[in-house]
Length: 209
Image 1 (cartoon, rainbow, N blue to C red):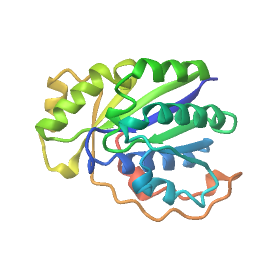
Image 2 (cartoon, one colour; image 1 turned 90 degrees about the horizontal axis):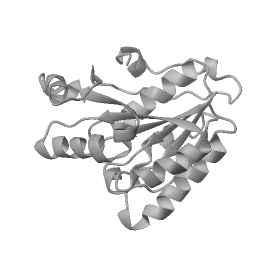
Image 3 (cartoon, helix red, strand yellow; image 1 turned 180 degrees about the vertical axis):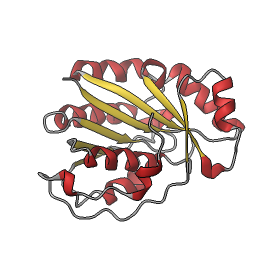
């Protein structure tokens, strides 16, 4: 069975990428899946900090600096290749400007992942500004999302009741709304007994894609 890599993506900061990554990880652990996390936002590694005592494999690769593109891609591929030995799903939490790195030459990056034999999924947290719309369009047409199964999320906390409707009207195939999420502290849990880790309340209110 192919392993899966899920990217929590978004063009801007503050749209909920880290919260979405956390919700995905919590749901997977609750379901008994073996999970690994790659933190791409090393300057604000809140997701990695949350799971530092959870027993899951965690890596850190700076994904925000275009000048370090090759280093980032190689580090990402290396971590994923190693993580697939013990994890079923690898969740990658991307920083705000990751489009300037992995989305610039997605073919090279995707070829590397294909050689590792993993399936790729992308969850994009959408903003509601004009620049966010332009960034989303670039991700969907030129980035890794253009060649992967992608879910676009419309955060309800933006209080933009027409955002999801506008995304669908713009031709986005799979759109879901999600409410404001409030992560609860992650309890200590055993590497070998993930089912005993309590799922955060935030994940019980997310839409099922």
